[in-house]
Amino acid sequence: MEQTIQVGLDERSYPIVIGTGIFRRIGTMLHAAGLAKRYAIISDDRVASLYGRQLQEMLHQADLVGELLTFPHGEASKRLDTIEQLASRLAACGFDRKDGLIALGGGVTGDMTGFLAAIYMRGIPFVQIPTSLLAQVDSSVGGKTGVDLPQGKNLLGAFYQPRAVFIDAEVLRTLPREEFLGGMAEVIKYGASIDAEFFAWLDRQREAILALDPSALVPMIRRCCELKAKVVEQDEREGGLRRILNFGHTIGHAVEAASGYRLMHGRAVAIGMRAVAELAARTGMADPSVADSIARLLRAYHLPTDIPPELDRAALRSYLSVDKKTVGGRIFFVLPEQIGRVSITDRVEEADIDAVLNAGCHPC
Ligand code: GLY
Image (cartoon, rainbow, N blue to C red; front, top):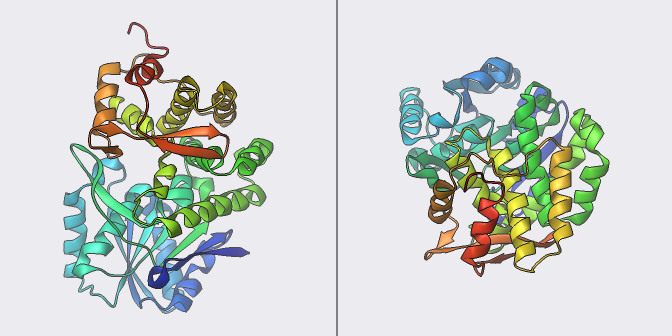
């Protein structure tokens, strides 16, 4: 059975439907939503080979049309070129504003499809069917869409909300294990930064979650979506509060970039969360036990907690300075005060930042 959470954004409000077996009922659900009769299903080649035909068939059974448009999998596809190619294919197939897009896949697919939906014919409806844990608990909700530039990730984009999000926990069975664990970093982020009870629950439910038991996965995903929806409802365009969702991402993005994107996003975020917790301890904002608890839970989910010793610290430092979260030359950090509570500050001594970044580096 499914559960529904509403993201309340006035005329841009939408449901997030979460459960198991959603995929098999998706045609009926889309039909009931009444958004469009014809959809372009945007998916990468890998996810399309697993679920593309099945989704087309589900739409067909519900008297809807689904054209499958694919692109090569991977972050390298997340660029303006791909958007232009997809838009040309939409135009060639005669898609207009009465039609809709479906993002079928992980974060790259969701971000690109949302951006395409925002700009194609100045905006057409789109729905998200996220198939990675990261997309299910984070990127499919909240309307951040975009593509990368050679200078950095997500530098071109728009806030554009989906009309619905359909999350089927069963599809996580086909997700590579490393990607599932990477997604767990984003899950732990919610507990560590907003919800101490959830943090403790994640510790207790470790075995069931790692075994992909739906009775643990569904409430886990639902809690993340509830927490994210609450934040987005209060601050859709990241004027303030939404920045707490970047917990672990400021240093995480720099670690990811300094690794030449060889380190997976979730693993980099895990390292970033531990690093800011150490920073909070150094600045006296948090007890050192906070960093220990975060590191312990991350390790319990097989996630790394240390900046790799071989990572070039000068490169890391310079990536940190060009991150989008830098405002007027100051780096804003989301620091934990305790488990479940963070604050945003640009008042961190350079020496403390350097000490945290240089930890474990040999030779420095
Ligand atoms: N992933 C952070 C946000 O959506 O704001």
